[in-house]
Image (cartoon, rainbow, N blue to C red):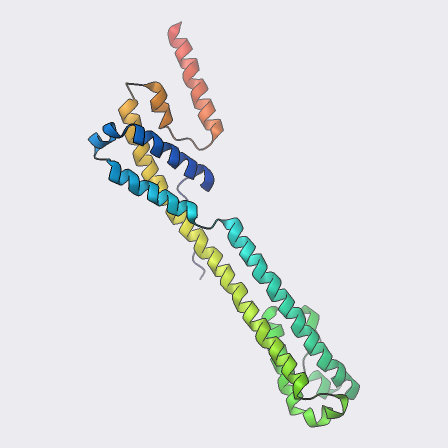
Amino acid sequence: MKKQPGHRQHNVSDADLYVQCMTAIRNAHRDIEFFTQYGYGPDRLKGFMSSCQQFHDLPDDDEMVGEQMIGTEKKNLAAEKLKTAIRSLMTRVAMKYHDRTGRYRKFGTAKLGDMSDPQLLFCGRRVARVARQQIDFLADVGVNENIIQRVLDACAEFENALNIQQDKLHDRDIAVERRVMQGNKIYQELVVLCDIGKDIWAERDPVKYEQYCLYESNADQKRARKAREAQGRANQV
């Protein structure tokens, strides 16, 4: 069973999360004398920054999808090369046997264009094997070891490209999982830092208090600011 990626604990994009973390770190550096009173000193802040940098350096999904697409393109090219090698051999076989005969059907290439990747690989090897079994009967139409080896070489190239493509799929899954885990790690630390910052400035400075408030989007932040401004005007009446 395929392992499901972990659950993201935040609703902002990875880029927004990184920016929020770095902004909070800058604010905490400014307020470090207060943070140390909570046991949150420069070393922990430095560790938080290091975790954020590790998160920043992880490949994002666009990079992994691009690698996956490159792998798929190479696999498709190898598949076409294998089909070409098979068709070249089967053209010679068709000169010897009618396509409704058992000897021709034994090659199993009737639905070559519709085969899945595993079926195509299986077919290529079967074609080479059957051709070798009948090589004495097919020699007069040009089937020889070179023709058969061309099919086998194309099979090997296709199998390698197929394996690389599958590796890229798994690499993407792993990268997503790592990014989610690291994102959750720095988000949890961000929440701790911001809770401390809000506690420091709750009754001292509303502007600095606001700097430690976390919002899921800029729209949420604007709505919260408007609500506070409206409440302030109401209190002045």
